[in-house]
Image 1 (cartoon, helix red, strand yellow):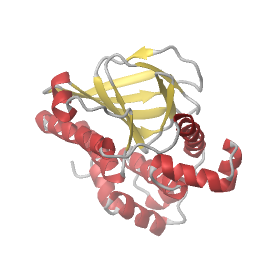
Image 2 (cartoon, rainbow, N blue to C red):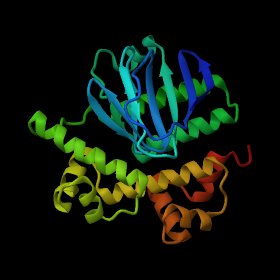
Image 3 (cartoon, helix red, strand yellow):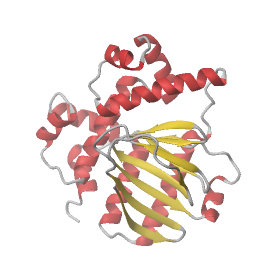
Image 4 (cartoon, rainbow, N blue to C red):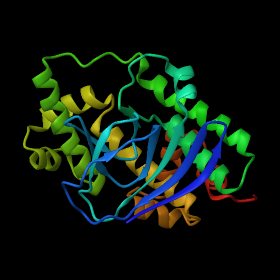
Length: 270
């Protein structure tokens, strides 16, 4: 079941809050993208296939959909997913990247992920629509800039595809259980721990340990947006050693103390 709520539609920009609660399944019928859209994943994990290329979408990435893209979405896990979709008019898209080729998969570093969540929180508080549209354009530009100067992975195409497939499988497994050890994860995807560690960093730009931390940190941000206030309980639920550990990680990942992040995303004092 798909629930879509439009929170902003102004100045060539549309922001939608998208909640998918489909049961785990593979082989869904293709859907055709109709707009230039960047989709930021807030929670969950799913697989998007375009032109035969699979991309695992979890809270560490966004993806870019071009008008006319034939998209298939598979859901490997039972808990569904939540996303923020930012669609922009063709004229706005042209002003951002012209004729430059844009990668469909966009890694979202901590500052981009936090900006996206703050934008959605502001839209829920009915902030000025013009300011929200401007913020959305800036956010899309930031997401695109991450990959604009990124070097293409070295190696033969078949090798690159094989590496990416293994890393995608590993990211799926970590989305379901971030506590999987490196040996457990390597066994799950059928390669050696050393090989997995090496190719994971080459494909994603960060280590498996950092990926685990980012998944946990983004789970915390989503829980803040849902109104969670008990930091000790949240630390235990999200897999941190204790509340102090949660605070250190959130400062490192999001640049602010949990109390400040909770106020930004949960609407305290609004």
